[in-house]
Image 1 (cartoon, rainbow, N blue to C red):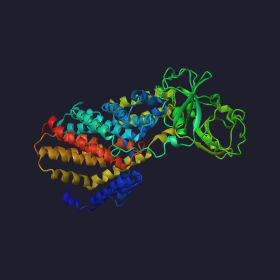
Image 2 (image 1 turned 120 degrees about the vertical axis):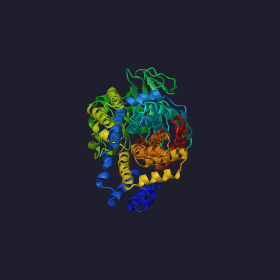
Image 3 (image 1 turned 60 degrees about the vertical axis):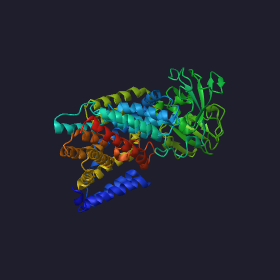
Image 4 (image 1 turned 90 degrees about the vertical axis):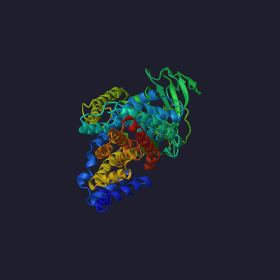
Amino acid sequence: MSPESLFGNWQALFTSAVVFVTLSMLLFSQRAPDMAMIGSVVALLAVGILTPEEAFKGMANEGMLTVAALFVVAAAVERTGALATVVDRALGRPKSLASAQFRTMLAPAVVSAFMNNTPVVALMVPAIRDWAKKHRLSVSKLLMPMNAAVILGGLCTLIGTSTNVVISGLVAAKTGHTLGMFEISWLGLPLLVVGLSYLILASKSNWLLKDRRPAMSQSDDPRQYSLEMLVESGSPLLGRTIEEAGLRGLEGLFLMEIDRGGHVMAAVAPTERLENGDRLVFVGAVDSVVELQKIRGLRPATDQVFQLDGPRSERVLLEAVVSNTCPLVGNTIRDGRFRSTYDAVVIAVARNGERLQMKIGDIVLEPGDTLLLEASPNFLERQRSNRDFYLVSEVQGSTPPRHDQAWIACTVLLAMVLAASLELVPMVAAAFGAAAVVLVTGCISSNEARRSIEWESLLLIAASFGLAKAMDKTGLDEAIAHSTIAAAGNHPHLVLAAIYFVTMLFTELMSNNAAAVLVFPIAWQTAADMGLNPMPFVMAVTVAASCGFATPMGYQTNLMIYGPGGYKFSDYVRFGGLLNLIVMAVTVALAPLIWRF
């Protein structure tokens, strides 16, 4: 469609208005982004531009379904504690935020050159989130740079992204020859180096990349628990110092003392090495206690806990406030037989912020005491209406990791990556197969699997396909492409920049592969009309279709970090918009030097 005929097409004009309003809402409104995107699709459906099938086809899109399955696989790996252990050892203890950002960018970028970007980000998000929490770092300062580094790393080989493979197929259809495995590396490696440099420098700016931590931190929690943890026999922590074990500097948690065979060390040095049977006394907020429960080789130092039925990995932590009608008030936890009465174990007690200087079993219960309990998940239903407690609530994410199944989760993950990388099965089949195996083997429960899925991100992905279809169906995308390229005139570098800009624009508004397929024939024909080598234009389309950093919809991994990072739409525009321009400048400058016009 020509730009002139666009004005006579009410459907294209309406679609352009919907796109403008949607982007404005995403940028300036406080409404949920998935609702804004779904609203735009509903508007297009209501006026008849989209059919119901076209509007909701994104719900069955392979990319969206793959992301959903990968959320489950990543949660299973996290649930078994396998990934946290690997990440902790690989990333170590950073001395600064810049060091932490570099560590979380480099390795994922290298890995993404040889496997699909989506599983790399899916696995790194929960691992980095836990690692950041442990080292008191802002997760919003880590996830967006990591995601950008993964996308740039994917440009370094033919199999790095699905877009590279799509472009290779389009080139083969024109010439009969596919792109080489490392042909794009001549451009991808410089882009990676320049991109990492920008990411490190820009991440220091609180304007370009804001700290999105909530105003109230864990340390603000008024419920300060005293908790004793026992170093188990055969624990991987044996012989390691307090600092090496990651038990010093935990956010919202303080190691008060170590009881070693009756000898109490009140001032614990970071160089103190852990021994079998050490009882570690911590004081901290409930969220910090949850993180402590996940450390392999530590368990609550109370004999009561081992009298509960079933493995610890099937239990949860709950908080219960003792009422004045509780029959155990005035009795110690041991004498009141709390475990047999409620089929739950008290592992810590909070009372008006004071530390209770006694063993758990010797604490005399008082009205208003907040108990931290370990119990089966059905405890909440049994005691919700019990007058013995004012309030009972589950502590989210408190189930101890299933360490004994870590090898299963890791094996499934490796098999999924190999199957997809070697193209034995499509990525969506590999992801769903892996999700099914971790569910069947018990690495993750069905309820945990449901909770692990970022539904907001999936709805945003699904709705974006409907909006992209409307742009294609009304000819709006073609009109934008032709008018932009026509404005560049006959100068090769300007035309190349226009091709890149149009592809980048479509990538931010529709899927990356759709943008590549749409602009490729325009770019190829433009090069032919000008008598130029089409390869610089092909590479410009390839890079631009993968490098959508300025909107959450620009790349599916952008959406995967949206919720966990606590980001807003404007964060992508500020941080990713400048990176878009830098990558564009480098591509337009280098592509004609590597592949001569």
